[in-house]
Amino acid sequence: MTFLVGDIGGTNTRLALADASGVRRDSVMRAANDDYDSFDAVLAAYLTKTNPGDLAGVCIAIAGPVHSGEGELTNRDWFLSVENLRNQTGAPHAELINDLSALGYALARISTDPVCGTKQEPTNGQALVVGMGTGFNVSPTRRNARGGVTAMEAELGHAELPFSVGKLLRDELGDAANVFATYEDCFCGRGLERLHHVVSGQRMGGKDIVDGFANGSSEATRTVRLFARALGRLTQAMILQYMPRNGVSFAGSASRGVLTSAALTDFMEELTHDAHDILDPTHIPISLITDDAAALEGCLQHLQQTS
Image (tube, rainbow, N blue to C red; front, side, top):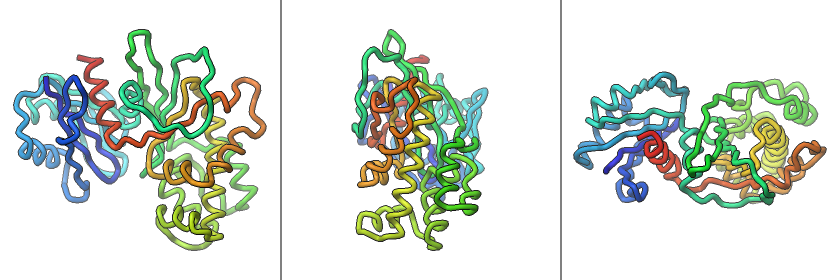
């Protein structure tokens, strides 16, 4: 059986064919969203290019909420529905899921890169995926006895920051910290850029900020270290919220830029500072999802579980 899987992010869309063995990496197409008026146009171009024949199912993950088989991107007026997916692809089975849920399902199929922390037995089967790229969101997941995954939807990026994170930012930045009201205001690529503007008065891209930190820029250093400290406090709070004894897996460019840098020490210090007795943060493995096709593998996992 051949499946079609896709991942629509804030900037790019990836589509691929898959079968029982996994995503066919040579079939992956990456498209810049700005080059198309709608997802239907992206899908039409891919179907013309690949001519996949009969499809057993299609699953598309989107950067936005999904309800009753319909969804719309949070930063683009693209509307999708399972009905349209069935009509356009001819597949009898169509699924539409949130992109962070797709990464949650992917944990059953991919390996992640360890960052810190040590898993302590017994575990509870619960994990947490945290996405920090164009935006911010999470997906709490739970493994079942049959090896499947339940990946839950959330829109945490639009929720208010925990008090502990807000206090850290106010202590460091004073009233200027008031611009950071929600998770997504701070913890994403644009959030890192916003933080740097508050810290330094300069407007720079996220990659340039991380590169500046690596090269010893004092202003970039203050920005990245403060970002990492705030992320440590945020992660401590999320560990208590979701009890992910199986681990926390970060995804997205902002995650990779900070957690693979020298600022990891700052992250760890805040993660373990004044930790509650309920759950020792050092007993929670922290890792990175670095596979660009992870969400596609998650779509395949979801299709196989729902077929």
